Length: 115
Length: 227
Image (cartoon, each protein chain N blue to C red):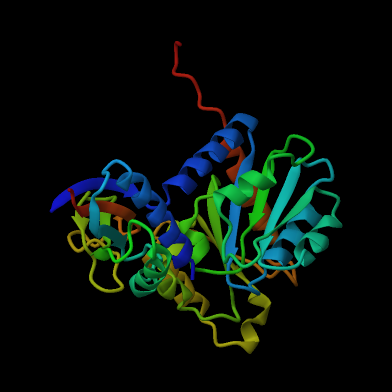
């Protein structure tokens, strides 16, 4: 639902970065989305495609890498990627765990062709 | 082809404004909470009950977000505390800029507690930091007890879950135990308070939580011994 706003923020950052690369052609934008980022990739692609028309990002591909959840056990400090619907530590069984990754919403890189 | 590494947060502009808000709350000793739920879970009613129970001299203000209408602000203004409506005009969440704009010339006096009622929505508000000390998610018994599993984003970011409308338990299939288990699966450290805003059950626990958290989270950092 808020993918349009997210797409707009991405476009702003990309345009700012592209100003440093005069005459370059943008091919792809690498994004990292956590499983719990709350952003729907297909909706984001659609919104970005519409907003990017007639900008330096027109036609650029969104390469989306989905980041899985990662927890850290507060008891044994083990870091683990949980099985579906599970947040207990697979090593010691403790349920006292903290999410360390999985909510990210980041622009990782741009692929461009410079003149 | 050249790869330019960016490593940048998409919402960095919102995060920057939220950091400014956080610094302001810190400076002024204002405890700020961001209340998030589906439409109709009882955010406004919980705020009514909260304002009703606060001493008249409390330095409290409420910011309430909706897509349209100032109905909530009117409901809340009758308790005598400053209330301001943010009408987003279509946006499904509040962002840090809206809060910053609303706070530019308001509230009229220094406050100890700012309650922000977000737009009714369990998805989008989760992504936008408003500079708050904590997010509170409200889930009512007329919804599904699997909501935490369906909307992990907001449940994983919330400090407190309020299970509202517990008075309706005899009439609905909602399994309280399952909801609690699901919430803890997403956020093992989430605190939980069961309330009925209509009957008043649990409101004392909520008011106690509010006051204790306010004191704990706005306490000045003690200087190291000997310095």
